[in-house]
Length: 385
Image 1 (cartoon, rainbow, N blue to C red):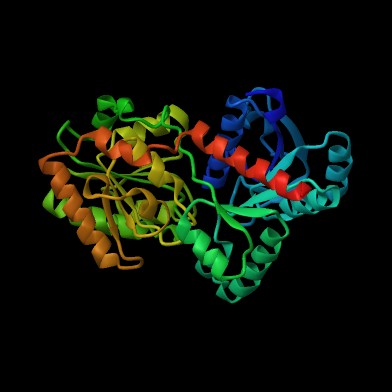
Image 2: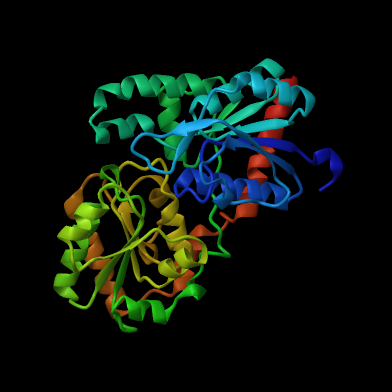
């Protein structure tokens, strides 16, 4: 890349690995990808309590700011307002463009500072917080949350979303200049080549037994009990099949106590997580509250057929029977039936892993980062006009 095309990009986020959530993983991938194709990256995020454990990417300049704990999400923090600090820093070390990944106080400060300095800022819409309110007994707050999100994103040059479906939804609700930015998956990390027979043996499975996998936060909004129901239906036909649940959350203890036949494997990261994916045979993803669902891409990249509701990542990438099955949103019976059907096929004759993996072609970290760079460059040109 020639020097005139090199961008100095400030990425503002209130979550970052090793925190485990889709936003942290997405932002981490974008930062790595931008560096790999020759751009410079400044990362602005809250300082974490366990800062020594935070994931570092060489060549990223970091600005760490004060934060506070996120209620009901242990280990996660939000950034406190920091407009004055950002104005002083960016007046001296001006970024070419901003990508603001989160809508908390720090994200709001970043957009406001960018507007004051006339630096183009694009925001990422990662989470339907208005939808989540209903899962935590605060459905009455949903309209207020939705209005805040609209105001926040409309202060930026563009709102970047991972699916055409979400773009249409937000546009119909008054969001301005909504543009598509595909989500990336690390296809070097998540690959069928990481299948581990020794790990499957520890799960109590032989080579031909079915391993059903679910990865995610074990919380009410993730609908994990439907995965457990589908697994029970599969086990009634394939008694040696076993469900492995990777992740943690407020529902884990209760569900583990009620389902002794299910292996709750806890939080897994990096190559360990990739081995868990690749050692499965079928991915059950029953969440009906995702903005996208990054784990769907990770499962497909690992060669696992996915059973999911027909929206988000599943609608974009589960395009044929080889990749699994999509069912109508909130049709729990159809989800169970589809899981049983795909499991029966896999038990009889498994689809080649590389055929499943083809569903995520074009979503590499570098390809998506290059798309982000072009969107940010376009925002600069429009801002200068």
